[in-house]
Image (cartoon, rainbow, N blue to C red; front, side, top):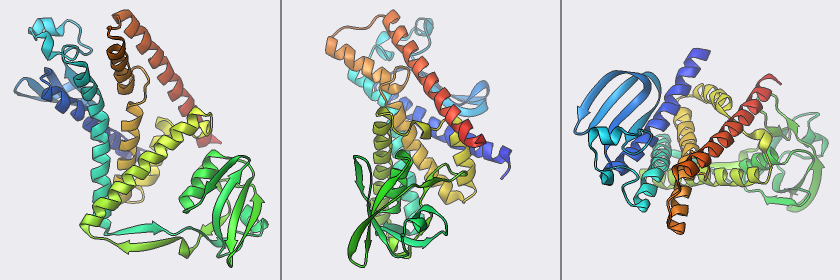
Length: 356
C-alpha cells in the first residue's frame, strides 16, 4: 500500500474518532443549554456551511478532526458581542454539568468502539475463544527449541523475578513479554506433568515484539458460531478487554515499566498502514480499539486534556472556590509541557523502532 493511501486512511480514522468525540461534547452542551456557535468537520478555511438553529454546521478545508465552539470556552469576549447570557456559557452552568460536558467526548468514543466491536462480531458470525497457550511447531535454533519446549506443551504460567502471571491465552504471553524483557521462566504442562524452563525471548525487528520462537498450536483456540444477540455479548467483552488492557498498560507506565513501548503519531500511522492492508474488518476493529484509547487518554488527569479540566472542576467543588485565571493558565501550561514531553518521547520511540 502506498504511503499516500496509508496517510489518507490514517487521517480518516483519526478524524472519525475526533469528530465523534467533539459531537459528544456538542450533545451534552446543548442538553444543558450551552450556546454552541459552530460544529465543524475539519480545520482551516470554511468551504461549506449551513446554519441550523443557533449553530453553524461547517466543513473546513483541512480534513483533520473537527471541533465544537461552545460559549465561554476559548472565545474570550465573543459572548458579550453576541449578547449571550452567562448561564448559557460553559462557566455559567453548574459544575456537575460542566463535568458531564467534558466527559461526554470520551463517553462517545467508548460508545463508538462498542458499536464497532458488536458490528464486527455480528458480521463475522463467529468468535475465537481462547483455550490456552498450546505450543505448535518450534523454530530450529530459537529460544523455545533450545530450552526443550515441544509441540503440544501448554504454557500455564510465566514469571520473571517477583512478577508472576497465570496464562490463559497466547495474548497473555505476548503481553507479559512486552513489558518484561530479558530471561523469563515458563511453567509448562506436558502429559499431565508440570515443569519449568528458563529462556530469553528475542525481539522481532519488524513488530518490535518479543518472541519465543514457536507457532500457536491448534488447541489454543476454538471457533464458535454466534447469533446477533451473542455478538452483542462478545462485542461488549471485546471492548472491556481493550479497556482493561489500557488501564493495565497505564499502571505499568506509572511504575516505569514498558516506557520503551510507548508509541506516538508515527507508531499509530505505522500500525494503521499495516492493519488497513488486512481488510476493512480489521480496519474497523482497529478503529474501535483506537477510539477506546483516545477516550480513556482524554480522561487522564492531565491539565489541557478533558480529564485535567474535570480535575480542576472537582477541586473547585471540594474547596468551594474558583481558581483564578492566572492559576488555571499556569496549570494548563504545565499540562501542555507534560503532553508535549510525552509526545516527543513517544515519537522518539517510534523513530528508533522505525530505523533500528
